[in-house]
Image (cartoon, rainbow, N blue to C red; front, side, top):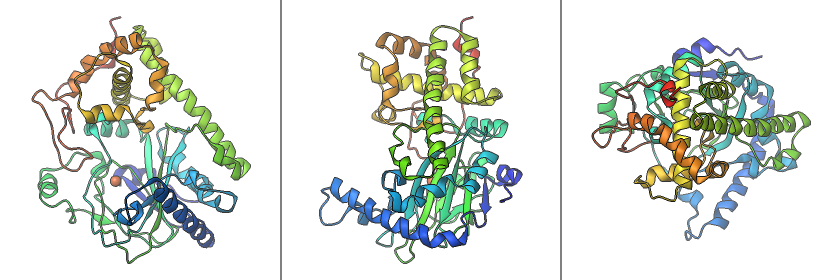
Amino acid sequence: MLDTDRGEFTRDGFLILRELVPRERLSSLRASYDVLTERQKQALCSKSDSGPKSQWETNAQPRIVSTETLVDHETSNAVEVWVSDPVLAVAQALLASPNVGVSAMQVLCNPSFEAGPAKWHRDIHPIDMGPMQLQQEAVIENGPTYIQFNIPLYDDEVLWVVPGSHARLNTTSENERLNGNARIPLPGGVPVKLRAGDGVVYNNHLLHWGSNYTAETKRRTLHGGYTIFPSWEDIGFSNVLSDKSCGLFESWRDRTRQLKDATESCLRAVHQDDQSAYRSGLEFLQPRIGPAGVLQLTIWLCKAAMHVYLLKSVRVEDVSNEIFQKATVSHPISLNWGPGFAERFSVVESDAIWQKFRKLDQLLRTANGTDYVPGYQSGPIPYFIESIDDRFCFSELFST
Ligand SMILES: [Fe+2]
């Protein structure tokens, strides 16, 4: 039984889990993932007409994107490892609610050429997730709603992190370094040294770095996450899994429906000025959250309202392509259930709901055009990247 030290995870933003995958399972997992890697390459080739070099060969960070779409009876252990007892137990110990599900099952592979280091960054795109500081406050208050795993099948120390940076904003000196050369070690940065079968679980608010993408070392590193907002619809692949694992995916598919329903209820509650129904919806989405968590969920609901409005509106709203693009994709870990979710609302409803959220959207926007801070998955945008000038109480959405 692994010792999951929640205190260390909260303090440092990451936790190394030795022998998360038992050594005796490594060779069969490596064999399965070699098969899946070839299938992923084939899938990319059949989709692409990019010439003699495939997308896989030209990618600095080639990866298996959705393990579940590639597995069969012979390779089912590639999914089973993600829902194995030790991994699930870590997620249940660290996330904000015990009601957790896997969110993505990817594999990071070595490139076919010397691609070198990537840029230091936090996995945050404030344009549709909100300012960093409010997300950090919500995690400190309630625990994380999403955690990320790297589990290498071969020894791996590509990932570096700045311990503790998940709970604070960038420092001035970090910004100077990131604006200068974001591809060299940051002060305080440390490599995460993992042996095959070890795992690291981390809060992806951390400043982190892919230090070297090289063709020289074979890399097959499981990369994915667990969340309190899982999103599963088509789970046909699960018929190759054990009954227990199949049952987990069925429960996550059911949970997904309930989470979408609760998101819809919250938006309708705002429309109907029903503060009590809004609080009940939030309580379902994330039980027992405090004020920082309420504000964070309200920001994600504001983004959801905007996405629905942009997709349904007959009027042309003056928004950038980047904002509209976020409405056309899903990002369930921040309550963006994708364009299909907009079909739950009429044009009139989507317009009325968005009008209620406009004031909050205005507070998230900069007064003078754009904001930019290095180290985020963002260029200059019309929204605050790290913190807002004026705080907001969710009750302002309601007139009663
Ligand atoms: Fe990242």
